[in-house]
Structure formats: C-alpha cells, structure tokens
Amino acid sequence: MTTKLSHTEKINTVKVTSSNVISKFGDILFDYVNSVFLSSVANGGLWLSLYQSSEVFISVIFNFLGGVLSDTGNRKKIIWHCDLISGLVCILLAIFIPHVFFHLCNHYY
Image (cartoon, rainbow, N blue to C red; front, top):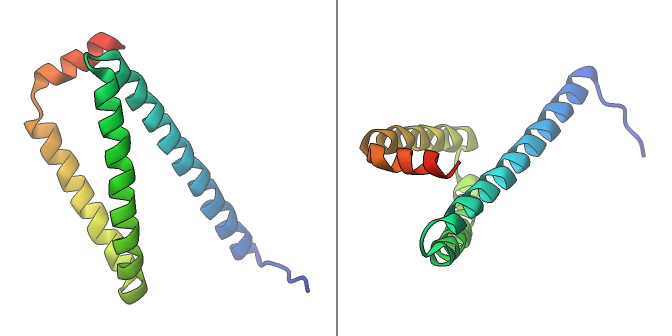
C-alpha cells in the first residue's frame, strides 16, 4: 500500500533526516577531536580510556532513564528542561574553567 505524502510532510521528513545527519556528523567529529587531543597529552591512553568508558557509562544510564521519562512525561517539556540545564552547565564551565587550560588546548592545535 502506497500513500502520498503532503508537501508539509515531505518538508518535515527532509528536516528530520537532515538534522539527524548533522547531529551524527557532529558526534563523530567531536569524538575524533577529543581522541586526538587526549592521545597527545601526557598519559593520553589513560585519559582516552576514561573518556570513552565514561561516555558509554553515561549513555547507558541516561538512555535508560530518558526512555522511561519520555514514555511517561511530556517530551517537549523534557527537551526544553534538558536544553536549559545544558546551556547553564556550558555557561558555568566557561566561567569557572581556568584560562590556562584554554591556552594549553591552543598549543596543541
């Protein structure tokens, strides 16, 4: 059985698909840059293994809890709250991370 998509459905399909592609590309690029940077510092293998294992551990915990929350709650409200928390954490990290670390990062690239 074939159904024709309306113009709005086609546009939404393109938007969802392209946003997933961009998100996956960003994830791959972020992981690559972190891997290159961590492998270039002292004890890089240790830091790289900690980074990758913490990424998997956090992914398992949050995917499980996120699935339960999204099934039982309002998804738009959950996404809004998570984006707000993420933005605040980024602002706080930008304020409180020592500037010496930023100069260290620029030294390697």
